[in-house]
Image 1 (cartoon, protein in one colour):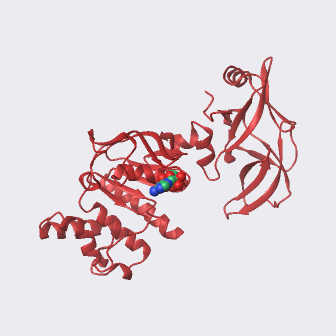
Image 2 (image 1 turned 120 degrees about the horizontal axis):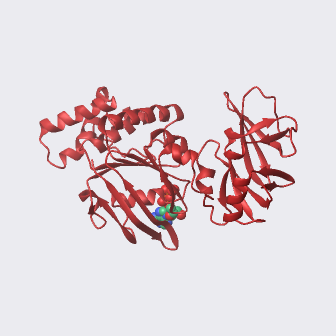
Image 3 (image 1 turned 90 degrees about the vertical axis):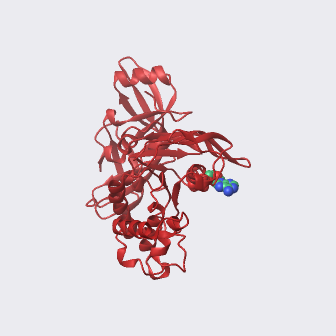
Length: 365
Ligand code: ADP
């Protein structure tokens, strides 16, 4: 397994800047997830690594050797797609054996590797069947087997679980974790599903608008978002981000959200005064789980909201409201008897607020 390095890769399609100067180091043996909304450039970046697309500029290196100009097969990377792309007329054994056969591996070695991989993927009993006799999940295991059978430098996966139904997806996600533990493979995995990313990744690269927005460990991305884009994308529901007006005053300051004024301690107020300026607008992020909710007003600084929709999820309910025309979500225990139109009063500890620059979205620190 190898180190992969993406250095300042740019890829345009006509006037669309699909990948905008992304740099990323994937250490050998790490499972890196590229996470971002649809159209953020994830697939294009992965295809540049695989060699299916040529970047307009920038380099891709494997173990320190530039491979940007090499065709896919000379990079020794394996790719798994959303569609399984198995050969329909071949047995599962022959599908998995195929990459070794075309490299003229001896039959005994092929059989040994196919059996090892089938053991790992729990599909040994399916080896003599054909793809159309398998379920979607089994076919995706076989496709994974075909990808890893020749022990490539790294495994590249593009939304491999998306076409499976939810329970199967959860099961295969757990299996992937086990397989990666047992094989210590270097992997890049593309998904728009942040729960999948959090569950699988050693490292998450969050992409937005073709740019790398943050690269870090899952918990770090979740607890310390570097910008308002990451805050507003990661988490379920994600961080609520509001535009507020900041004003400094002697010994403290305040944030104004609509008609509500929330007091700030001196340290936070000084930071905001220095970084964004007295009287400026700033973005404030508050995680749904950091919000205390009351059915009545307890303090003048409580933020009043009116529930627009209430989604019962079994173990919790998600309440959606509009605050200053922005979507705001709360997670509450299921026993609340709430419906659309209910008034709620919210408060949170000052230390739980994340501040971001109004113009750039960058964290104020
Ligand atoms: P993601 O994988 O995050 O959904 P993509 O990498 O597929 O994003 O796409 C990034 C941007 O590049 C999008 O705006 C998409 O429409 C555009 N794009 C991707 N592939 C092509 C292509 N072959 N031709 C033209 N535009 C493309």
